[in-house]
Amino acid sequence: MKRYSNLDRSALVFTFLIFIISSFLFAGLEGCKKDTKLTVPSGAQPPTIALTAVPTKKAAGWYEVRIAGTIKDAAGLKTIRIKCDSFHLDQTIKVSMDSAVTSFILDRTVKAPLSLQNTSSTIEVTVTNRYDLASTLELKINDIEAPSFKTAISDYIIEIENNKALLNIDFTALDNKALQSVVVQIPELNIKDSSAVSGTSYEYKKTLELPLKKGSFPLTITLWDNSGLSVTKTASVRVSRTVPYVGDLDLYIAPAQTGGDFSKYISGMPGVIKRTGDYLYEAKYYAVKAGTEVYLLGQKSFTGYRFGQDPLGDPGDLTYDDKNSLPIRLPEKGYYVISLDTKTEKYTVKKETPPPSEAWSLPDNPLAMAGSYFDEYPAANRPKGAVECVPEAGNPFRYVTRVKMHKLVSFTLTPKDPVNDKWLSPFWRYDHTLDGKLIQGGSGKNNSYSFPNPTAVYWVIITFDLHLQTCTVENDGLAN
Image (cartoon, rainbow, N blue to C red):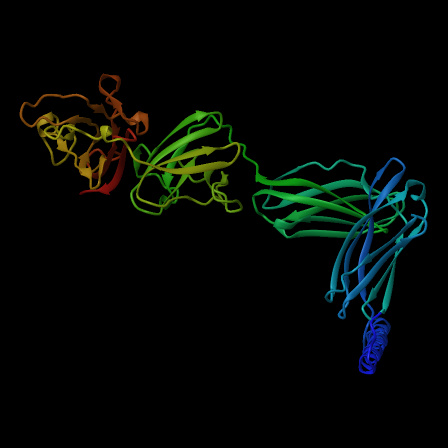
């Protein structure tokens, strides 16, 4: 057996005493730590609770209630307790204490027995913060049936008449307990009509005047009851103009700058239009400068059918209204194709480039006009002395010639033969009755136009377009 000296015994006793004292000190510190509570500062407030409880759906034997909203506390949240005895519900959410959580978004769905659907239930939400200050909110469930529509909601088509767009709405709202309000909205038109209502049935019957804006717009109708339950239906409201155009008449295209006076056109109108189907048309036009504006007409006048951009619609919306239609703008110089549908009230504008093969390709035999009534060209009745036509600068398909004529407008567009004086092919005959169409060779007829004063001399502008296959003749006034 090992023997210890007195010195060794003293050291052992000292070490044992140090161990005992340290153990007591550590235990005391731990006890203090466990018993320590946060000091509640003056002015501290309990948490704020902003929650709603809304029944969402029913199923066999139960229904669901959605509890949602925001809970806040500046000092930090600690616990959230959701309790409802009739639902057999008692849940506690422990918020993290690692750091102060000052805001908590709650979104929880709980189930309730369907047998309670006709009784009042209270969901109690109690929230504590880090200072153990508490707030309690009671959410009452008195009703689980949202309102309903007795009358089906369908899309509306509104026709603008007398510069007014009137929307007639008629439906019946129902609720099992008590209605509160009806809200009708068309946000894109800044329309909002709210009506406070009561009872279990309400007939909404109103006429709303809409802004004069053409197009289709979403409509929403929301019903609310006294329990805060709601239902929303959506529909479409289409605002348009009545288009009585039968779709099988001739159309003309004309510059807007004429102001509707086409008396200068002896024959033909600028451009050409063909019908491509029921209510469908294709217009071809040459814009002599950027920003040219045109209308499409159902007659040789601006009074009547004047198709153009609808000022109430989006770009590409068509209207025939001769008082309100705006001209269709062609942004650049050149050839365009304008496609329109008079039934759906739409049009498109597309620039086109004619193929080079359509240009005149016989430089030794330039195109010329042969006829007997050119005042300054007495030998123009033969190909050798015909009035030579010069293509427009930058456009090999278009020829514009200003000449003096008397008595009749009568000529043939022909290749000029300055050497042999022969009639070459192809050639085109001027036919006043064809309203500007060019007919090649033997298929055509020479139908002339008689000037109002047979003894006077007139300036005449003759425009041929080989791409459009048109011939426009304009009276540019007296020359003597």
